[in-house]
Every structure is written in C-alpha cells, then in structure tokens.
Length: 106
Image (cartoon, rainbow, N blue to C red; front, side):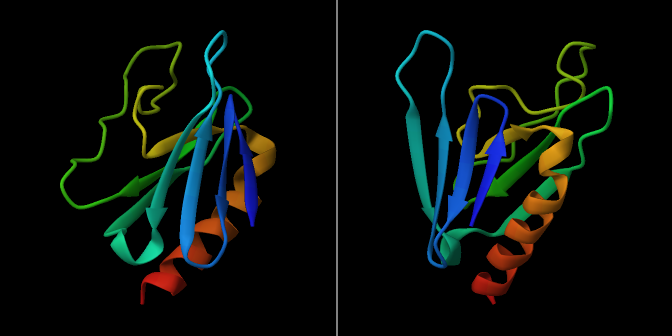
C-alpha cells in the first residue's frame, strides 16, 4: 500500500512502514518503523488551498508541532522524519493507509 506525498511517499507492507522524503538537491531519506512500534497516528486532510499531512507517533519522540505560517498551511516541518505532507488527491489513499496501520497495531 503506497501513498504519494509532496516530495516523498509512504508505504506499508503489513508490518513495516517506510517514509521516503526526496528534498530538492538531496539524496532520498528513508525512515522505517514497525507498525507494532507506532503508538498513534495523526492526519490532516489536504484542501484545495493547503496540503495535508500524515504523521506517525512513535515512542521516544514527541509528535512534531504544526507550523502556523501561511506557507506551510499547518503541517509539521519538512525535517520531521515521522510525517509526510500529502496533496489533496492522496486524502483517500492516506485514510486507507492509516486504517491498515491501526489494524496492524491491534
């Protein structure tokens, strides 16, 4: 199960979640987390004006705060390894991905 994000993507194979971020001018960064290690998930749906985000909450790290600037539209910062910004077209796929992660956690 894959979700295309803004400058990256997130995939889930039933056990492992992989977030790949592709910042302009840098090599892709991969973060892998076991679904059993996730303590919570957060999602903000994208709108016509702003991108949304998917965020994983893992033990040992506090969830990144949403930025309040006009340019970021209430998303966590790009350098947060456990979140990914998503475009409006990925809202449905992201909802399904988080439901699959929640099911794997229980």
